[in-house]
Structure formats: C-alpha cells, structure tokens
Length: 113
Image (tube, rainbow, N blue to C red; front, side, top):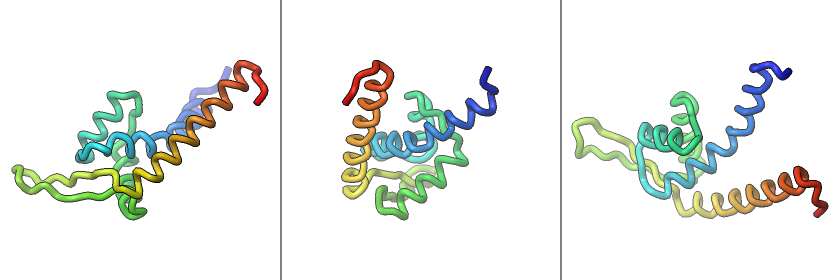
C-alpha cells in the first residue's frame, strides 16, 4: 500500500502546474486573490493562500498577469487579470495539456500513436 505521504507528494506535484493554467483561465475575468482562491477550490483546485499569492506575484512579474488596485471599497483590493501575453502562453499550455491528456489516454487504453 502506498503511504499517504508519497501519494500527497505526487498529487502536489501534479497539481502544481495545473494551478498555473487554472489561474490564467480563471483570471480571464478579473478577480482579487481571495475570490480566486475560493473559485479555484470550488472547481476542484484547492490551493493554499501561501501558495497562491506568491504564484500571482510571479505570474505578474513574468508579464502573464496585470493588476490594479480597487480603492473604491472600504478595504483596497488588488485585482488580477490575464494579460495578452498570458493569454498567448495559456493557449500554448492548454494545447500541450491536451496533447499530454491524449498521450495518457492512449497509454491507459493501450493505443499506439
């Protein structure tokens, strides 16, 4: 039987890349960090806040997200949005994701390419 630690490690590695893709998809519609955290969780991508916020900063530094502060509410919030460059990268990531999915399906079903 596989230990919980081993399984948890592999699940974490598998989800790490998918959270980037999921965030870029979700942020096609502007949102702030906490709302994104909730939306990702609601769609099966549970992410810890200590993981998400550094990820958002990194994606912004890479030019894949843009951000702006909304100061109209009682508490200012930073809203993120997928940039044009982020959209281009996302299209490539989604194409690769589809190719990986097809390859895995082929392996599972025993179909040669």
